[in-house]
Image 1 (tube, rainbow, N blue to C red):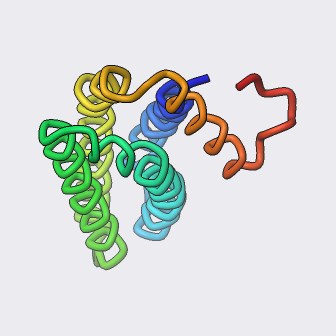
Image 2: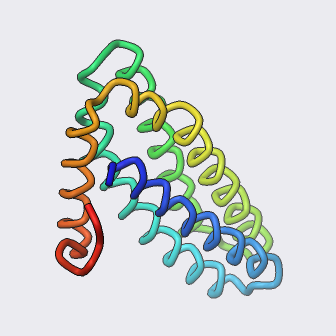
Length: 151
């Protein structure tokens, strides 16, 4: 399967996680918001690393348009990282809850931008064999290769 299919699958999981965390955040204590932040940080940063290694790097070499799209996505990754850092330093529950909800909204906006712009561009710019090889490498990195997952 294509790397795009695998990344879309991760988006589905991340959307569900974000929805659940958004429901929990309004009543959470500061310590609980920090725990939610840590959970989300691990999931998002792992996903972003895979995107960068297996999609952004090969895609940005295909055209100026692709390079600009990837630059925009990396900027959003940086913005998400800054919000994660800010949230780690939040001092009050109200501030932490608000920052967490802002972080969740930005993450969803970022995923949608990838789905509407970057993923279709990748499918247009990269050969299917390349996308499938990147998908195989994704499975290998995730430790899923050879576990009954079809490539």
